[in-house]
Length: 516
Figure 1: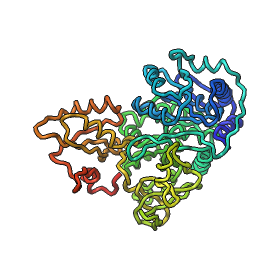
Figure 2: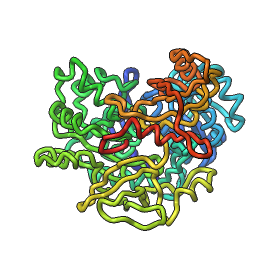
Figure 3: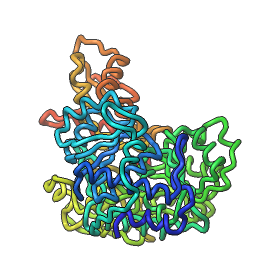
Figure 4: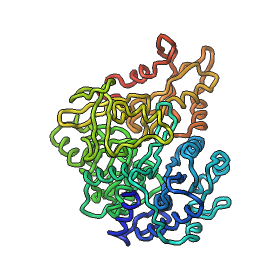
């Protein structure tokens, strides 16, 4: 099957049900399908061929999903641009993925000139919410094309999406998600998380990440997707009550913010069936508190862009059981492998390890990407011994529960975002007062890990921390800017003079059961 077929199944079973709702627009399944025909025909008229890349640069918005459906309907490949990323990073993504067309929201209108000059492959663009430069708004542009299905066939091994991930250098790579990969994700999700009523899905986290992938697996159930612009705790709690939301995905840091909100106990969460968390581990104490407030609905997923979302899962009933039986260590696990995912622990020589032996988490099966776009060397690197290597270090217990205990590379997960130290260190090292530095993630109750810069100042110089932070913010954006700067007299180094980042990191995590 093609990914678009799963949406069409939603149309078939619930044509008049609301598919997308945001502050400005509502679309039923049938109406969204007809709009997707128009978008697809517009892309075809613009010369977009099956298999070519089309990008969307937009905050959470119902119209963005109409664009995604139209891209898939045209047989093109959807490219996700993170609205929170710096412009230069998104330009790199457009260049690297050979983007031929762009749907862009007016929030980013000031960036358009630089984007078009820097991306020679772009054949055209359309404003999403309003006219931008010479383009029409999406609704005006769509009106020029017929609401008739173009019937472009794509195979199960054809790429439907290019999802951005990051390598150990921090440079984004494009994980090729084929129709088969996404079908496997959908099967895994709907097997593990059944519904006895129509899903009402709240999209609060960025749709370009896990929240958007969750929408894909709910399409064939005729789910209503309620979209809010950002993961604001009060807006989320209000939306759950107002729309009778029964499923949503949030990174742990947002759940933590909800738990401490003064109005957390004033809303009705009785509609919730699955409060899904992932992208980072969640504190066991906070899990207990969340279950008390939101009910027996906490659901944990483990996955990554190369094997989207459904490598392993811990169900609400398992959360409840381990809490009831006092097996709190189980709440620190991320569940057991999903139906169509094979997962194991491997040592550095390719041997599969037994229970309680620590090694790298590896996966294989139809959930795994066939590789990175235009990057065979990176693909080969993560495919040693015919398994996909996640870069996470973990173990399984006797009953097959997976525990993540560390990270093989130096990536930081803060608030659900993957952050790599190298580019932050480079920004800091451009300051004349800094001798050397290392950026690490340290334990933080709110963010999971807080990005922290440990700095060695040049003798005789003075570093103004606030100025250094502002320097990072202007170059990297808020997500990657360190939360804290710590000055050490001297950083630890190897015999050849390399700064020992892991040793620095471990000094902040000492005495904890896990290092993530």
